[in-house]
Image (tube, rainbow, N blue to C red; front, side):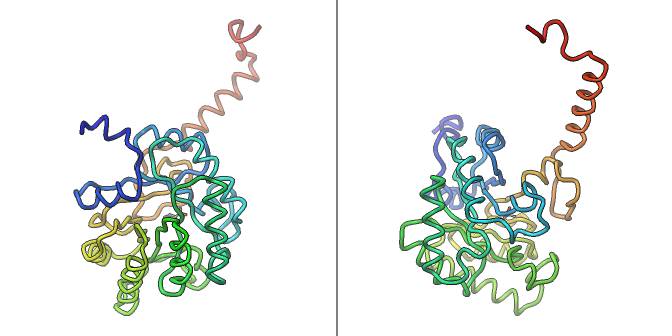
Length: 272
Ligand code: KIV
């Protein structure tokens, strides 16, 4: 199949599995709205994550905890309406799956019905495995998320690198195995030592996507506001900035203000 044809093919969980087995890296970014999703999908991105990081970058909250299921559904549906090719994964927000597996299933069903997304993502390992199994039993694809799990920030107390000590590293490996055995189609590993992430990616057969987890995994994910340089306040070591959109947009807005005030805009050609 030609590269051009391949780029047209809708990405499914099966395609991601093939990519891992063909040693083709998976490119994933977040998006939360129609316009951004259209750009990243048409650019050829493999996976769009409608992350609960929307709580930070869209709503201005300090943590991901405040965002609600209704708000995630709003973002998810906006993204899905723009997308032709990428696999769309929507985060289950804090408080919608930890309590019991029945509630987890109800939340996941709402996301699938009301957004038409392809899958959900859920943070945690053994402690939420019943929820993962119940969601999977309804035929909903689930992506896991281990390492730094921002919904547990009040338990961790800091956003520093996780699983540096042997005990936590062993638990993470065990959790990753459990998620795979339960039937997850992939796992995000956030902010853990590269060596540990590589070990998990080599041991597991499902795709492992890293964020701050080195290059020995099967793919990478970043928050789009961070990699485009829209968000200036967040500069962890793992982040590569591909643009300084904050400066570009500030310049464009300043030019507009100047043109309005000097009556340069609108010109003769820009009026009826
Ligand atoms: O919500 C999010 O953006 C995420 C990524 C950081 C993986 O979960």
